[in-house]
Image (cartoon, rainbow, N blue to C red; front, top):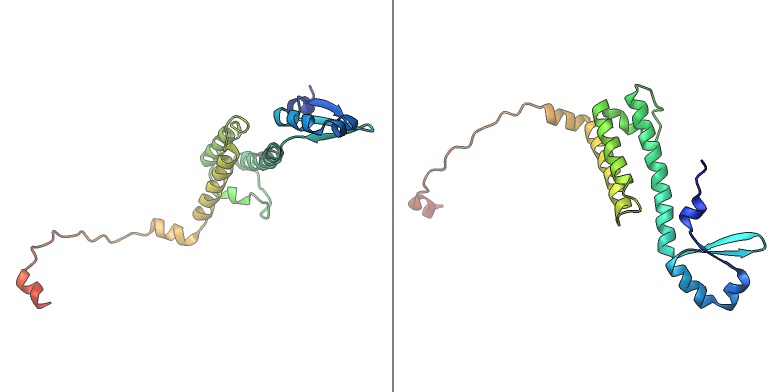
Length: 169
């Protein structure tokens, strides 16, 4: 079954260019409510609010990111090797369980796009947090710091402060 993107995205009002020229205010008012398709010489143009178009562009861009990220995570879980120069090669530092957790978090946030305001930004933040964790996990300095045995010195109970001694200081 093919995806009917034009009806899902537009659910639109169709007007011709002449009608747009004669009644621009009315057509723009309609475009505030729902997208408008303008026809001219067998060509079609979309008219919709800029913020709605920005949403569609961001959603498309993040969808590509999510697809590639999850694809690489699944491939790594299956034990496949990926190109060391791949954009998501940083996923290599995670084990299968962590990759499953990443996939679940990304999918959960991805499903909220279009349902909740700010879902794209939250999804972007989740991916960024995983990226930062990968950098931390692959840092030799942090690995040493986390495994380093620290000689802890217990603090002793403070003694009463001698007022005559403090006067001399």
